[in-house]
Length: 463
Image (tube, rainbow, N blue to C red):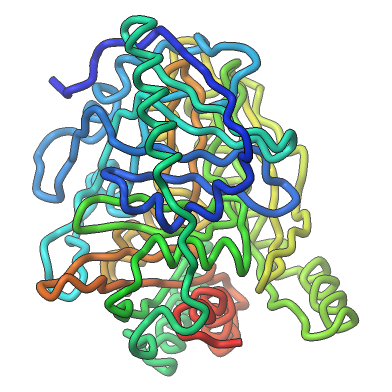
């Protein structure tokens, strides 16, 4: 039995002044035990969350023989779907989870390999933690609310007050302005090798083996002795805030993400939404060049077709847990612009079927279609043959509220960190793209560099 099975029905809330400095404290927040942050930025930002000191944790290790779907359902058995309090943010306490990409291979009973950094221990496929308090920053209202949950009103108030005390004790921490890494990032797959792999996938597509596969390559490095993953998270948010920025402290490991992509959101009423991204161009150096690149992306038949394939895949995945006939596509190939890239983004919605929960949604749809391919299982097999294990990259960081709501990101623009024997933070980052029948190997290789550019700017101190 997992260590959190009882519902936590009581809620206590408290408004905190000067909510906007949540971002100034981001680097310092990382120092707290089990620190987690969902940091939203950009025009679409609505809520950001800080939490720490989990009450319980369950881990599905790489070699753990337990069934992943049963594990996930057990870990969320305390949730009471559609029992959300009106007027409060979507996350009021509950589960925060990290699903590695290889969890998808496990769910499909495919061959897996462990993800490691510099040859160290295998990362788990799934980590699930119970947090009984959360700080929720409302970007629209510029307010910060502390929320505590518990078995009694007093327990909820105590959880709330404890998190406020942590917040008050967290200083603003100045992020170093120069390079955060002590060496230039090391490329794992040389340019010509990556281009050869792209060409091989194109040949498989022409042979009829699949329609699309996402191919990535990795970079590794090490932070300076005085720098932490929290500093990286703060610097990424300052330089290029993204809708699904995040960090999670796992003791001797951590992840930091600057992702622009939602995986699946489930609201308290059962409405599901996913925002698949396919299609990328760099930002231009002048307003005219930038507008031309955006127009080129919008007019690209290749990129629009690539996006449509993943929209169809996500429609299929949501339909597995949705009410019959409820799947819709209200937006197809919309343009979204970020600090270093333009993207094509679509929206797929559906209504969750009666009796289904967030755990069912994740199990039915993981891994995200936008970073696997179509058909999904065949694409995952191709990825496993051509790449190293991905670990957190292209997995998902998610929360499941005690009242049943869920939100989740696709962990692109993401770094995985691990402390070495000298107490230094080693890291791995990766970037990739969807390969289709008319993909050009050189252009696909350049796209990986474009997508990693903001991370490299922050780590290497580029201007």
